[in-house]
Length: 137
Image (cartoon, rainbow, N blue to C red):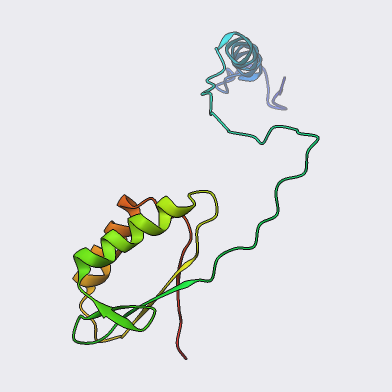
């Protein structure tokens, strides 16, 4: 407690906040202990332990998909219309869904973005997992 060195005729106008702080700290601890802990379960698919090693298979050669400035799509350097490209993607995935080739997409900087969006949409509907973009320097 703080005391003034003045004579006893003046009353002390300072509030002693120490008991208030003590009560607030006790209440804070009580609320921290009794408040339910908010936890949200997150499902994580972890790999399961097996004694057999995974089969090692050679990945197929990558598919080079090129979109030029005019909007024409080339599958391994041969031009095809977009619906045929979608069928070729589905056929490629159907051949071996576990060992898919990588789809390497090369676009001309002047190419229409809509064509690229359609190619990516077809790749998603075909369930292609390995998609990469080629960067030309």
